[in-house]
Structures are given as C-alpha cells and as structure tokens.
Image 1 (cartoon, rainbow, N blue to C red):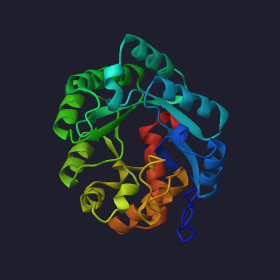
Image 2 (cartoon, rainbow, N blue to C red; image 1 turned 90 degrees about the horizontal axis):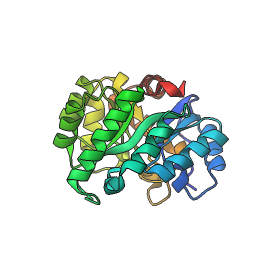
Image 3 (tube, helix red, strand yellow; image 1 turned 180 degrees about the vertical axis):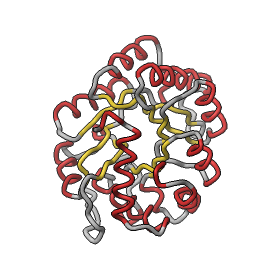
Image 4 (cartoon, rainbow, N blue to C red; image 1 turned 45 degrees about the horizontal axis):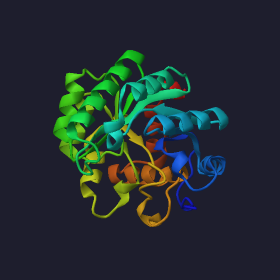
Length: 264
C-alpha cells in the first residue's frame, strides 16, 4: 500500500481526476477510504476499453465519491469496431459517466497502428461533442498529430491527461481552452520540462491526478500508486509555482468541477 506522506498538508475537497481503481491491488473501497483520509473526496475512475469502462461504472454505482468514464485507450484502438463503439456510446449516456475516454494517440508504444488510433480518436471526439461531456486525452510522442486531429474535429471540451509536453505545448493547449492534468511524474528529477510547463500556464487550466496504480510520486517510487497520493502532486505544483498549497488545492478542485460538470 502506498501511504500518503503525513508531513504534507491535508486538504479537504481534493479531486483525483484520473485513476484506474480496477487495476489497484487493494479492495477499491479501502483505496477510496484512504483517499478520503488524505482529503481526496472525489475521484474519476477512467475506463480504457468497454470492459473496464463497465467496471468503472459499477464502482461509481457502489462507492460514494467515485465517478466513471467510458472510452478506448489508443493501445487498443485496433479493437475499436462498431460493437465497441456502440457499447461505449451507450455508457456515455449514463449520468454516472462524466467523460469520454481515455482515448488519444500513443506513438511510443505503437500497440495499434497510427491509422487505427486516429480513427478511434476521431470517433471519441464525435462522442464528446454530441454528448457535451469532456474527453480525457492520452498523448505520448504524438503532439503534432493529436493537436491537429482535435482541431480538425472541433473538439470542444478537452482534458490532456498526464501531461507530457513542454512549456510551449502547455501554453498552446491552454490557449485552446484545454485543461492540463499533471500526475506524480512531475516530481521525478528528470522531468524538469513538466515543472516548466506547470509554471507556464494560468492556475485555472491545471488539474491534478495520480493515474493510479501508475506513476507513484518520487518519494514513493517502486510502490503502487493510489488516489491518496494526489496530494504530492498538489504540493509539487504549489512549490513550482511558489504558491500556497491550499491555494493550489482549492484551484485544482474548482478546475475539476469546471472540466467535468458531472462531478458536481
């Protein structure tokens, strides 16, 4: 179990905007209980395919403070067929589903072809625009393409999950009205470009997440990440921006409500 650092100031009302409870080893209800003890009272359980999207829905139904998404990760874009699209679309109409995704482009792993990834992303843009729900976008080694496809599809509400770009890309995303979500890897020594990105945009564009069970913060690396640890990301963003932790905590929670109206 990855415990939050007790020396970090604990705030109430914190939102973890991206985690995968269905992949965490511990019982999800216990994970959520630990998150609440750390001040995290809402979290977004993000589906990566029809099956895990349905699991996220079940968790949202059974655990207070948990919300769901429905979508297809770019790794599995080759499996996005008519049946998968119909199942995801059906779930998106459920009020417990507050966003479309996780979707996007990943040209690093290349577990699906570029053509399939772009095709699937375009379908998710349409689902987002039609439903009015934001889309959660994964980007790795594909910035020019993802920005082009989002622009071509007139994507209206976009959250860039686990932001991996530099300050220039962060500014472009902010100018487009996208929200930029930082995860625990902003604490890694080698990721100065992420810290520069967090300084480059207004606080009203910033979200925080864990991507649990992945990307545990630096002081907990080697352990499974959990939603409770999003407080580490808040503390790092506050340090980077030379702002008070409470200010960043309250701002990112307000931003989560703006980015995901269904959380309110």
